[in-house]
Length: 69
Image 1 (cartoon, rainbow, N blue to C red):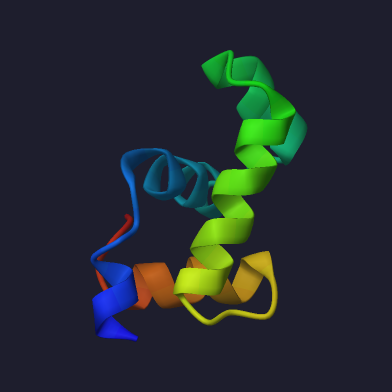
Image 2: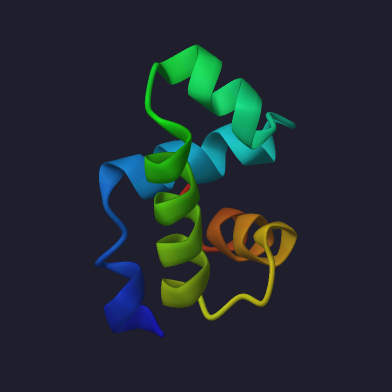
């Protein structure tokens, strides 16, 4: 998994951070002016790279690895 973690891009990390702070996908779209499709794609890619089955697990893994705060 460590090789894939290095592949997390800034948008994926930003979306995971926002999710960790309780933001919904709609909130993320409003706060960042990034289209929902890009937000969804970034979160899906982050979940795949972190080998997480859902967003909560991805946030947990990213936080545990000190990728987000």
